[in-house]
Image 1 (cartoon, helix red, strand yellow):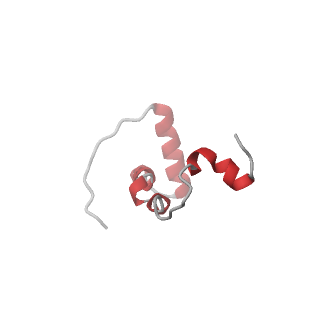
Image 2 (tube, rainbow, N blue to C red):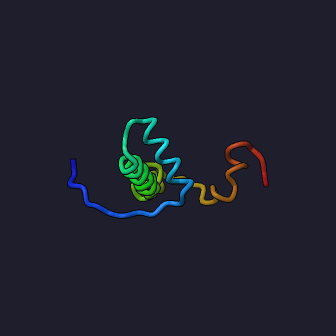
Image 3 (cartoon, rainbow, N blue to C red):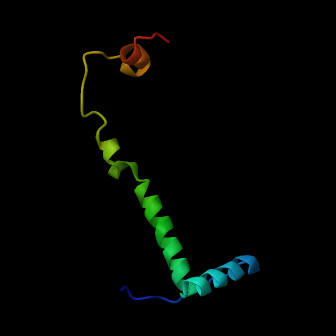
Length: 82
């Protein structure tokens, strides 16, 4: 486990009450709940990095003789005009 550093946080009374209740139910500490929540938030934000997204890497991976696919995709997929 990484070395932990002390910090101080302020919570509104209602939120602190809920954190204490949750910590008691889960038999853990408020600090552990907050660390988990912050870790999850940071992982979600990192996952939003489009450059690392496998779908993003597919852009430009194929080609076509038709140069108007973005405009006429319905025509090519479904036989419909705009």
